[in-house]
Image (cartoon, rainbow, N blue to C red; front, side, top):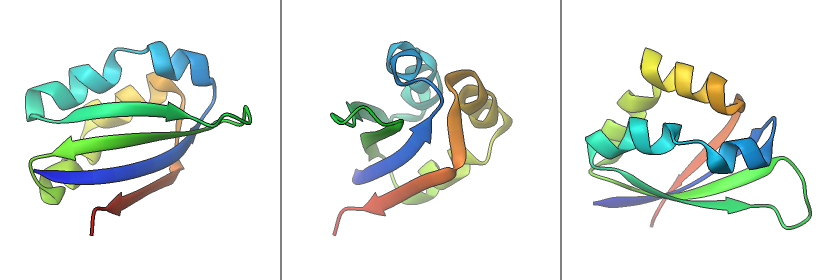
Length: 86
């Protein structure tokens, strides 16, 4: 398993936190995600994601299902920054 630290912005933090879309997308691929929010109240959020491997994560993000989930969750795709555990 690989651990990723992922940051991005969303339109509505509370909606994003409550959404089941992460689990629906990542769960069947063997991925888990812990969510974080900016305590200052910005629209920045973060995830610690456990993935089988980085390639699986990258491929999952390229799918129509991921694009749909991001749209529903209000994710701003251009802001996604993923870091791989060193």
